[in-house]
Image 1 (tube, rainbow, N blue to C red):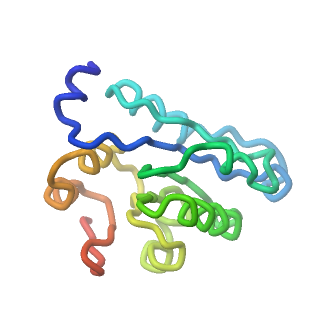
Image 2: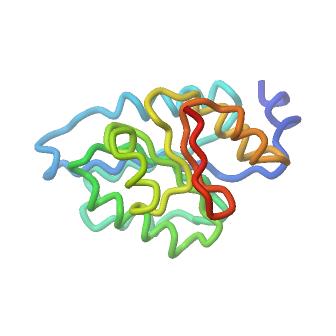
Length: 165
């Protein structure tokens, strides 16, 4: 499986799957089953995502422990976590000038037009989307052409917003 991935990948970018949860804001522990599914799907395809669980990290210190360089960051979140996610994205953007940040989950899906710009995201998955196709696109030699084939995403391209319903 990894040999297939290596043959398709032009420039490997580290993948970070970020669980932005906050146990105090959410009122308890809620297992991130969607992020677990994303992680599993990527691993089955041969990718090696790093999971960053921030649920007990009120000060977001864990984000400073990773080498953030030329990475792809996946964040799934609900409305209640919006302010925290903005802080997380700010930290990522300040530490990784080439970051590609993908948003998904209930809030980005419901507020897609607003969230893409307001949160400074590069792509939003609208509802259920095959994350491995998105990773394949970002690891290809023609990102734009590959993204254009994926349904259910909204992304930035040359200062324009592209929607693939």
